[in-house]
Length: 299
Image (cartoon, rainbow, N blue to C red; front, side, top):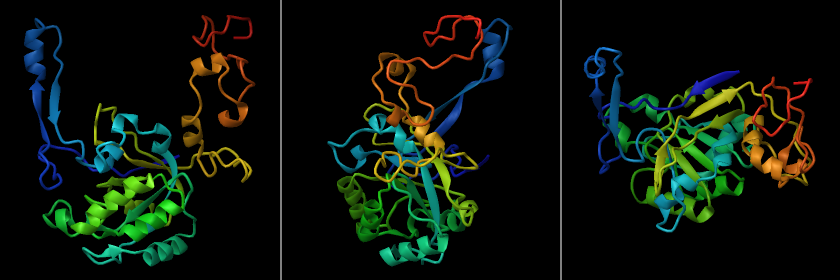
């Protein structure tokens, strides 16, 4: 397994979106202070952080696009572990629109289709060229509305880009945000290191947001995982998890409590599922494993 980190580092006064508050990161308690306060038992250091919910590498919630949209704490977690591809768009000029023909050509060059139920990461080279200079804030290329609609029509749950906004700075960017809300998809901003994905083929994308009440977005630790073993694909007629990797399929499995109630089906549970109400054999050692199994000599 190979994991590629796609996340920007967060630190004191990390560049943030124009008009947003800065990231404040500082020391709350030092080891020495805590050691003295403990009566010389042991010292524990801690820090504090203040930041907007659209700082660093982050995902936008539907609440960001529309006041009635779902906040980030309600964003479906199954959309956070999905199959992905990365497209090479580094030839697009600064501040230019990425149009449908650019995406079509990049997919053909990639050699892999857009994964339905997955993500497409757009490597424009903007982060590598400009971060942390002032041009990082203003000079990015980005998709237009037609390109956003093209991605949505191919069944993505979101797309990502290595800049602070999905569209070029200005009206187009606002319209792309609006389109995402209307199309039922979102996007991930301020990715980095996408160059490491080019030519490497499909991967599993993981980017879990924090559970912030009423949040309009959230920082994520975005990674691409290569070398996972996907479960066999279902027939095209089933399609509920078509193209999903094993981690994405596992993310859709019910909890042990739901399994005990029998309110899931083998088809939705995927490979290795038992019939409703049945408890799979427990391989853990005695005492009981916590799944409701009785201790047995076979444990």
